Image 1 (tube, rainbow, N blue to C red):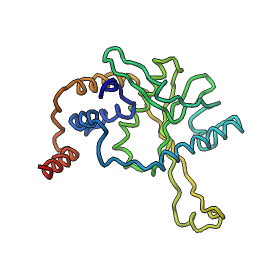
Image 2 (cartoon, rainbow, N blue to C red):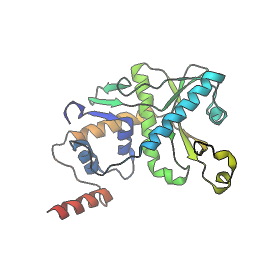
Image 3 (cartoon, rainbow, N blue to C red):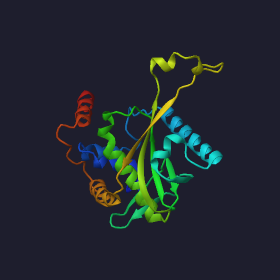
Length: 237
């Protein structure tokens, strides 16, 4: 892992906050020299998130206020181009861990404080509950980085779900078709996230303790990923 051994993103730190967190899986994932096998993340989601940012920023540039589907977030008067993880980071002195991140959205309120948001291209259902601790930690990690780097004072956090509209009634209209192809609409749902940066240092301490181990730690009882890994090992023997 080299010099990146004690560097972690806000999203990766969020894994430690899940109720079903497995130290063994975390240690293996971080130690794998070239990453884990069979990990595929469709690039289309990154493209949609990038397009969402462009839609929001261009609206602000033209109208000097947020689009209607974001107005429930509060008295927003502008946006800030999100920094990259190369600059948006700090070293936590008690643990020596470098916490980094790359927020999807940063908006400014009239009182000069900031809102940090994260776009999620997904259906807004209760099925998202299992991932909420990860998202909650990720956003609070961003807020702590902003605080420690002097980027600005964060007063609000939010998940911004953009859900594809794919019902038959919408599809059965001429408006969605054009000579170039067809269009897909998105409906937005806002989920407020509690601002609690105090939750981050204990997770950094927990991560450091695991990453310092020279031997793989014991896994979580009943961890499905551990069982799958053991199954692969048995096949290879």
